[in-house]
Structure formats: C-alpha cells, structure tokens
Length: 109
Length: 153
Image (cartoon, rainbow over all chains, first blue to last red; front, side, top):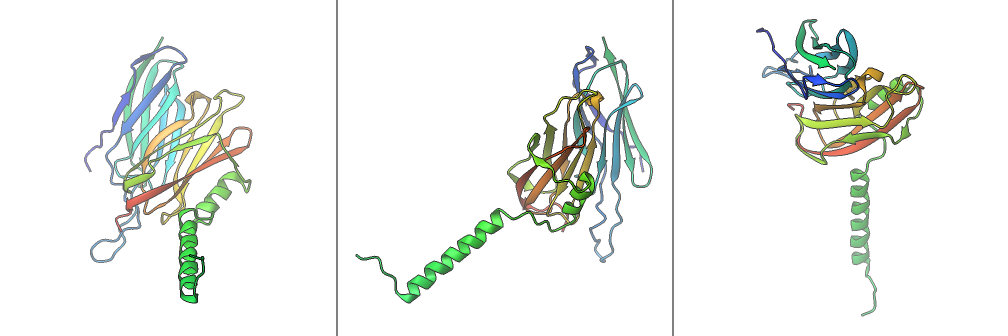
C-alpha cells in the first residue's frame, strides 16, 4: 500500500506558554469493521487503526484507543496546552502493526 | 351528549392507549443494552456506578448517515496535576459491538475535549463515561436517531 500521508492542522504555529493549541487531523483508512461480508459471504477481516497518540517534544499529551465503530478515514480533533517548542508528532497504529506518522512543528514563546 | 362508550369503542380506545404506551417505551428505552456496552462500562469503572453530570456529549439529534456521525465529548474539570480527567470511554448501546473509543488525557492535555466521527448502525444511545484521577466516575448519554445505518449492512 502506498504511504499514507495524514493531513494535520494546528490552529497556530506559534503559541505562548500555557495556550491551548487545537489539533485537527484526518487520515485515509478504510477502517474495516470485521463484521461485514463480501459478495460470496465470507467475512472481510478487520483492519482498523486501533491506537492514536500525540506527543509534543517527545511527551505524550493525548492518546486514544479506537474500536471498529470509528468512521472510515478517521478524523480527530483535540487540544493540548503548549509548554515547550518541538515537533508535534501524531501516530496511528494499524491492526497489522504498521504505523502512520505525521508531524508538525510548534514554537512556544 | 353524555360521555358513554359501548364495548367496541372502549376496546378501541384501550388498544390505542396500549399502543401509545408501547411507543413511549420504545422512544425512551430502559437502560438495557443490546450489546456488550454495559459490561464495557462496568469493566471501565471497576463496578462503580458513574454519577450523572460534568460530561458533555455533543451529537446530532438526527444523523442522516450513520457511517459518519460527528461526536464531541468534553468533561468539566480542571486539568492540573492534582485534579484531572484521565480517561473517557465512549460506548454505544445499539451497534453490533459496544465499544467506540477511549480517550486518554493528562494534565498536559490542558482540556479534556475531543471530537471524532463515529459509526452508528441504528437509532441508539451513545454513552460517555469519564474517569477522574481521584477514582470518581461521571457519565452522560445521548440518544441519536439514525436514518441510514452505518455498518454496511
């Protein structure tokens, strides 16, 4: 499968220490539930992104566990409190272990 | 005209009343889930009953497409090292499986709020349970009417 590039948007590139920064992220993925059947009646195996984490400068600020009830092409929006400058790294982990990683930079003054 | 009913009219009226009662029951279902959502909540809270309140769940009242229903959950709480929301469990009581997502917050999150898009197979309740760092639990639930189910049926 071609490399999936998540779309990530921070509501600001520069923040004052203590500001809330909003992150919006969208990643392309089928999020197959494992409950559907194909035309010949065989169950289509589950394939979802089951884990999402966000780290800022290496420290985790938010994470989530996903179940099959998350829509295809999962979108997520959350906030974190700006403490220090550094890369904002978003990671999604697939059922098969592959990782989708996206990165944005944030400068905290 | 005096208000009297013969037997047939009386039967019709009581049948109508019964139907109304049945519908009323269907619109506001008792907390008896069709899937494993009750067990998931019990597992999450360790058997404790979460208190109502502090959790805010934003969902459309009517979802035209159950394949992607926007959902926002937020919890009223300070996010300091002393007092913060650690986890929020989202379940639905009408999907084939109850689990939807679990969010993990920390004081570094600054605010316990997240927005995702979820699948809902049919009209049902979505329930959010928040776990505080002091071991208390709060919950909110919201019914969503779904016109087109989201499980590819």
